[in-house]
Length: 299
View 1 (cartoon, rainbow, N blue to C red):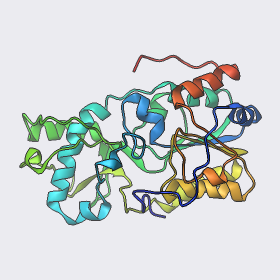
View 2: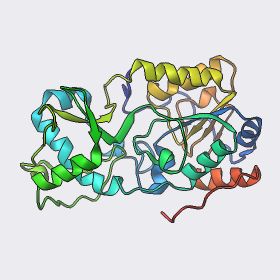
View 3: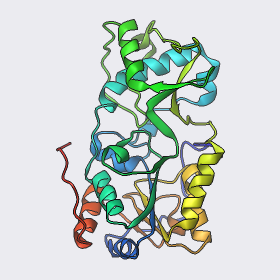
View 4: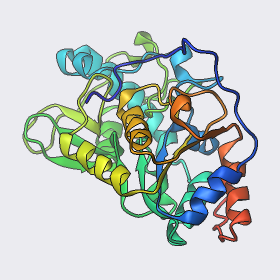
């Protein structure tokens, strides 16, 4: 039950060509009971990069692992410096047309639920309810000593106070909210402890190499079992934490539909993979189904 045991994936098979016909997805939505499983690709139009797309961060960046974070004070210093800088952009990200379309489908009674592999909170910001955050949320922090959770915005304020003038230049933001910085740019960045017990603080997300809570996995399995079909949005399904739900749906004979521009690890289990940009594709689907979508502010 590890979140991300694989940082990269290459198919041994010839990739299946994607389709530009969204009608199979429209048909599934018309039937209702669709469970959405979203990945980083749905948030790229909000300015948050994905891991494995054409400009994906795994082409240049290795994410922090749980083992490294817990074992090394210097690794934690590097993580929090990068994450603190990235949060200034990440924390201001707004939902895009894709998030708003998913919310509209839910309000129209077409969905059985939403599971997201993302940690950005943009589904909820768009108005979706009862979203299962498979990998947690960057909006919260947790103390590894006392287990208390707190607000990331409160932590950001404390880090600002402890690191006045910290403003190194970084040209890249990564999907988990950290910015690319060199060790020289990190310097002697001050990491603040838990305000209650003085313990080590960690973002309330499941790092690479960390275990997804068992009760969360079981809840997702129950959602798959109760759904009519599974709709994957913007995920390469490289890691087992998301792929297992695709396999479970397929084994139960439930249609799996994918909207993702690039081939995915789950294509063999899918009825179709629609290779179109998510925002325009989901907006067009909503129009086809006569489902009104909030426009929202320009991103």
